[in-house]
Length: 432
Image (cartoon, rainbow, N blue to C red; front, side):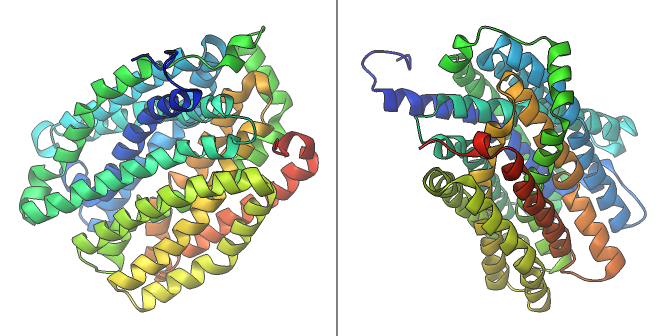
């Protein structure tokens, strides 16, 4: 039945719209997580090198390279979505994202086609990054414009919550493969199986996106900005965009630390088993899924600012000590406890942050502005969190060094919160 059918209540229609629009986020994060988790296997297949460190660094560098495309995608695709509408734009972002996923899944290894193999994997990551540059912004703005009055935080939080389902499914798939296949089989071909699963769900997500309805807020807008007008508006509001980048720093760094990098950290740094690392990551996905909507709903009741300030302060004070404790006493239980604590801070912070970022951006370039700030933060902070964490541990000898990186990102977010709420208090105060 069509979601706009009279027989459906408004609540049911909105729930269906939330599911349809967030399905693409699932695919994006599903593939990103797989790339991080199977970094060791991907390194051996596509980036053979003299040392494991060099091979892993090249793999994480390619992983990070996709994030460098995000700002470009944010401006070009974000402006396109602000012009043609949320529905049409999000179908385009899904098409580009799916192309990158399919490419990575089917590319033969270095031993088969030589340098063409890593080149094609890099191309796949660049396509994914270009698409993701506007995907998160488009989805977040769609949810914010769809939300019932006084519930923007709760509705918008499902953008991030949907990604946690991808983490849970990917971790569960990886755990199952680890039980069914031996290490050699996983290294040879088993790591591709979850990527193939991602390719198989692409048609289903396309059907969901095609049935999306445009938001009433966008339909009511009389003026659609041209690309030139988008650039001019963003240039006039460059301080807001930079502050937005710093605001997102806490989100993107902590997320990639506790999900994408965590399995590699558990195996290669703490020397825990693959099964233990996957189970911890699965639990983190569940934890994130719980805290994100709670954070969004709480921000609707008490405001965005208290949550943003409280969680960034907690991260500054506790991130490094928590990882230091884990580094000195590595075990499944300790890794679970520490990452669940980091998950709590991430979920509560991000639940408030995403909706705050939609509120601070000029309405006529809401998707482009949100996407540019988010993608720049992901490029500078989050996307390179695995490679920066790997390098920090290698050069300092301190296994807890990633905690320093997370604390730095939290300090940036704390400063941005003060700056944004001083300048834009009227804009950022949530409606109740």
